[in-house]
Length: 293
Ligand SMILES: C[S@@+](CC[C@H](N)C(=O)[O-])C[C@H]1O[C@@H](n2cnc3c(N)ncnc32)[C@H](O)[C@@H]1O
View 1 (cartoon, rainbow, N blue to C red):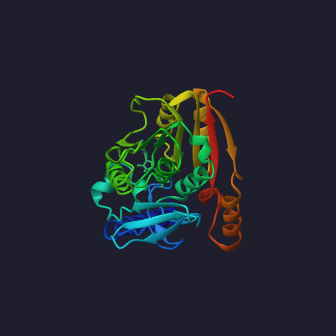
View 2: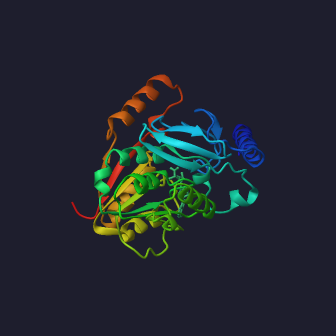
View 3: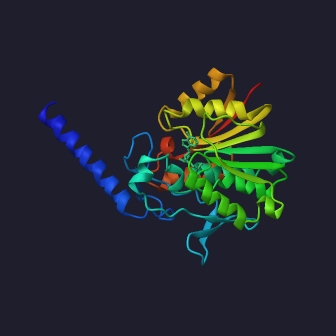
């Protein structure tokens, strides 16, 4: 290794350890304004990204109870959401993926917002959300504001699912309150017992080692006439790799950039006004998966 590349290597290592140390000692605040650094387990592996906190489609107002917020899409659609304002311990970083406990990512916000604009499509349908993180916001909105018959909210991370259970109870969507929501840990690749009409996933496509399992789980969980609604940024080649895997198992897909005027307008505004906004890593495209045309 030459002196220059050695220096570069050291510098990169130093920066990574700095980020790691900050992650271990600081409380990552999910409600911080756009542009603050966060540490993620994203493809770059512990490289900081400048994050767009949200697309401003859903207003987030703090409640008196610490960690609780009201998420409001317009005046009509409100939900109490608990943030996992967690301090990342070494165990957390070494354990199951924690990206869903950092914040509600824009792909989830966008999926929730899009679903609210298509409420009629859930009439009489069963819905499964995969990798819903600490909120499963899209699935929750569907449970509360549509005539879906069943909504199953899942993630592979136990802390996320525990938090979602608390949110479900606080919004009185659980079975005890005649609700139609189930909540469970589901790791992609594990057997899924039931079949669903609609399978959701937001920002779940960039995990190289889990992509094939994710695709297979969607295939296994989806009815033959079912549909997958997936939102995620393109993020380099990660979306294309997902689509390739999806095609390999037999899925047909449609990818759309401009699928909702409000979301597209927000993208245009960010593109114009925010100097670190990068469509490739920040803008969630919409993918529809079906088993037949
Ligand atoms: C970037 S987060 C997105 C969370 C949420 N959908 C959002 O957008 O706010 C990715 C989620 O995928 C989950 N995940 C990653 N690998 C998984 C796997 N193999 N099985 C199940 N869930 C997984 C993580 O726990 C995390 O919650």
